[in-house]
Image 1 (tube, rainbow, N blue to C red):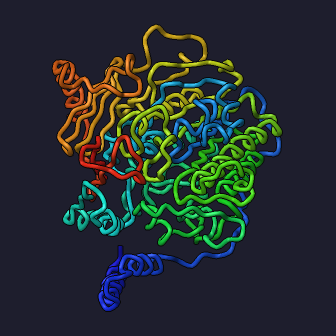
Image 2 (image 1 turned 60 degrees about the horizontal axis):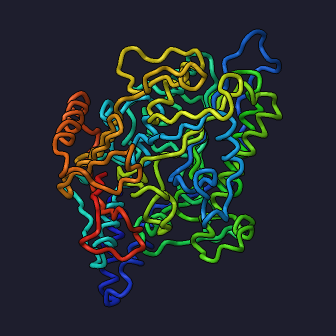
Image 3 (image 1 turned 135 degrees about the vertical axis):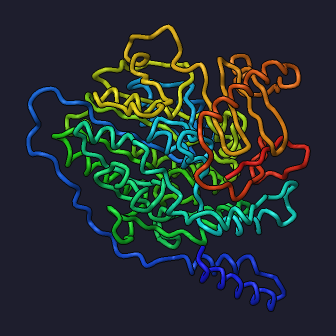
Length: 550
């Protein structure tokens, strides 16, 4: 946050004191929000680069579309246990995609927050390899969050490292190193036209932005509202108990950028806008191989739905749940329209479509069933935080109804998609992911793709090894050990009863950490997360909790 903004905050505090401290939080949010906002131009029509008029002769490598949802819970998909509001919100298009190809039924996010997962999808490498371990946040955000978290209403305070905050570069400079080789760079070298649409969150300078990391074209989510708050076609649901939500509503705008240009207004509701532009990309590139990375903001907060989608769910009486369900309708509609566009262009059979989420559903939205039946939330390494849907459809090669039940992860996407494209993955560095095509195309090797998967965010780490999962943290100082084969929802902690297994798994974690490097930028704040309650539920000191760093 700039010095100007902090001067404004200081002035706001003085004004608040003069008002008897009655409304100081609202005043600070008002000042921070208004000083941080920028001029937004009217929507600009994007002239997407067009491929050749005719299709080339001979075999053509498959097109690749990666659709990434944000904060999608496992139970938000109706094929996975009912869907939102006890099954009142159906996701027929996502369900159909899952049935069309392979369902990777024990798939894991790279991390329990968004940005490191996105880096692992792009590179096929653990965060410990490249150091992109923590999710970048706007400068000064942790100080604002601390003010709201530490108001005496919670049993555990938020922790903020003021010195680390001073030594942290601006958010735009907190990026995935340009020396890393991304999926876009690998496919571009194979002759693909590469397009990014939506969220990036891997840095926003000439070294870090999507264009610098291999994308020919990038339609960037430049802020965080789906529609302006006062748009006549929007229905908003503010989460009053969530400090992050308060910051987003104060600071965010509805804004986009194209190839690093000036900010302009999206054309309509963000999920629908990204979908419409994706269809244009498919049409423009029907005669050449392309990569489309469609990184939706949905269904991340702030909770905003179109009025039409909200009105389609009158049976849901809870307003916040109804808005959330309506957001899911838009995301499902997006998948359906993308698939219809591929059919219309004659590309459906030779296009790989991947659908997944960056992490599990968030407890801070106050909706208790988003990750059902799994415990935990985004910002925990319990299954609810890292278990994600992952589907891969490719009719030319993957039979419908294929199920891969072995543990796989986001790190597997880059090597798998590179292999499918006939592209050469980097050989000058460790690629932690595995090419999953042998398991997805009927060859079915006897061994599982992975014996071991790792997660790490500062002092909080986890490992899954041959069915045994260990989480270990310094805050609180505790180990959690589960046998996921017998206890897939992590109900019984076996750490005290099985110290030998704990020691074995800690040795794996230590070796994994030793083979990597330290974080690129420091952990500024640690947020307490109650494992079995949403942020909207009253918490006590006896509740199971972790501190999430970064």
